[in-house]
Length: 394
DNA sequence: AAGTCGTGGTC
DNA sequence: TGACCAAGACT
Image 1 (spheres, chains in turn orange, red, brown):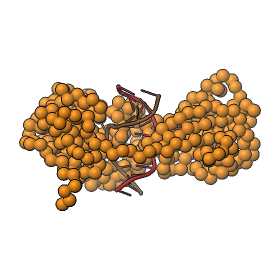
Image 2 (image 1 turned 45 degrees about the vertical axis):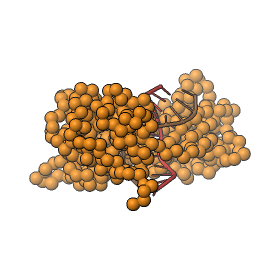
Image 3 (image 1 turned 60 degrees about the horizontal axis):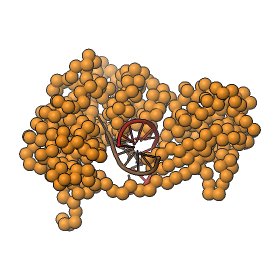
Image 4 (image 1 turned 30 degrees about the horizontal axis):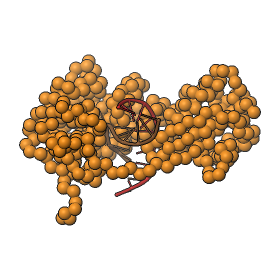
């Protein structure tokens, strides 16, 4: 073995005290009011007692790269609209995206929807009807779109109290500090999985995994961890080294490109505006938007808008005054949207770079799923309509 | 196996 | 206030 390779993370000392300290802390200071982790009457499930898997599944997908506080209102609205597997399987993609609107990573919604139809189709009434569509194995859950190993482990431990480990960002941070791992966890995921599995309490996997996540979210936080409140302080190598904030070690992130996007709010003589539905895959897949595209070097923004509408919709417009300019940061790029009011001149709009295009009245916009940046454009548009101004001045 | 994929909270 | 980051999965 090359001596330059990082050592796999090892459990520090006996495991039982680690489990006991963590679970004692969790009983006292953990988050015990998460709705999908309780029975409908609000009581906590006993050891081994199952929870309704559907709500857990929905929650765990929403929680991918998304904090609990953000998820809660989305989860409640979702469960009201699609209370069970059959309801979700029967829903349209439009309804699904409406309820996911603003939550981000929209592929999660499409995959959840596809997974519901998959489960619904394969669990159809065997006449003797065991009637439970929910997998009990890691492989069974990972066969569903959008479910990786960590989400599968979360669902199985949470819904059925089965002993499957998890390895989300919280757990990676807690474990990296516990052992003072000298390299980014991403480079040693297999070792961190082994560590998570080794630590997991096989008698109380549901409580243990939840405790680990609560510890990461509330005590072992990314910045300024509250080591004084930590049940693992005496076991923690990063704390012993005197600088827990130094872990987990990070790679320097790649630079994010910056682009200017010209956007047209095109109106016709009747005051309707033109929107298009983005392609089903890729960035913001399946959502609706105001059409536009990237500004080319040396190009005036009005020319960008005119060119993009010609290339992507096959229409001719006059570009009028600016409605709003806004900046928006995605994970891997930063965009500035420069939005101009436009007047339609000629050409039936064609979906050359989208799924479909549609003329709608301003008050109909609320019934389409839009990404967050477009929601701000809509707000500016509504304000102008409310003020009684013409949509295509000039 | 690095890049792609959103948004809001937080300091 | 910009930069970091979150209950990751997929290609």
